[in-house]
Image 1: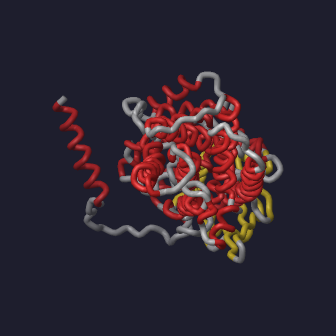
Image 2: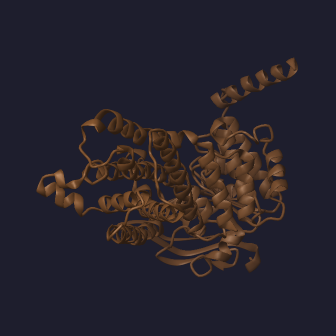
Image 3: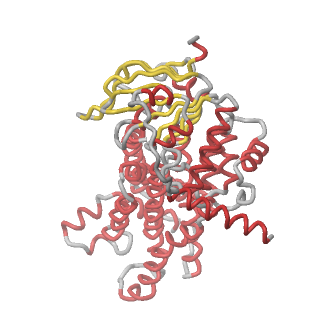
Length: 260
Length: 246
């Protein structure tokens, strides 16, 4: 890969908290414009990696280069070119959705904060709720606003730390759609998740973090080859509860719309 | 410019949570009513106006109350990842923190103003001119800043909302063991030594003298030394906690 095709390059990254070693030499590369999923159980250090790459945390040794800037040597340049959506929806509950977006746009020194906010509200289906305080929003709406706030200023690289944890199935599908759109427009997405299907749905490349190391890093197609060849079996396919839920809710919405 | 944005955020917080100012002022007002109208008649003090005597201590209690909310707001920003969002953006790391400090100054100023107005309704009068009043504002501002930095330490170190505000309770008790309600010369020796050498007494005495348009003596310097001293020490520790935990 050419250097400008690499959004993130990590080598020999180590980090420990007091006596507990979290990362024992992590290495990987993320291609510009791709969706990279970091998979791992709770407490394996996914968030630690995100924090190091977004300059929130200093690593003990190894190198991490983001958009061509070393995170330890040039944190300001890294911050200029990235955007973080943390594990918890980092939205200001006392402000309205619109005010939250305008605040971030001002902090990013954009020319027309109001316009930027309007566009994002529309894109994320929050126009109707724009002038309500965020404390009245549902979990899914908060997450949408949270991600919208990360898109202010159109960073080239977006970090999403467990973006769908705690969301209902509809919320998850919405977030997935958004992530796909983002990648479609050329933004690099670094995603952590503990849901295998999420990585399967979204990622161009999947890395599995286990016991402080990346044990696998490949495309889904290649990962599937690691398993024994698929056997052909005939079984009755039961709908999953998720499919049932979405079918019922979908029908209800059609009916509701029909009544309008 | 970034500070301006943070300040704008903070001011919205203040004006959208008027109930906070109510909560902060309600107990000092209750204590003021209790002491003036219930206990005041039995308290022997060489003054014909007990509200005048009481007000400086009540002001400090109000600020101590308001400070609990500063810790709570900091804890919320930390828990909700709002600090992380700001810190991953190209803005000064301290901007988010200074926003909270400004909120503390403005909201406490509003609460103290409310207290002064209520005291006025209860018969508080001051012969002091503009300069002594400005001096009072200055002392209260420094006192607020000193407590604010303590609140920053508490809010950022706390694990839960309950522990974030717990320290304010201790500060809240200090006026009771000071010259805020009664002169210290009626207290037993040990209590008196503590009362006369803790910050609240000198601050209360200085404010009381200023409001009564009397000479302040050395009290004002002791008061200023306490405020600035606490502020500097707390600031150093607060910044250390901020760098480490946020």
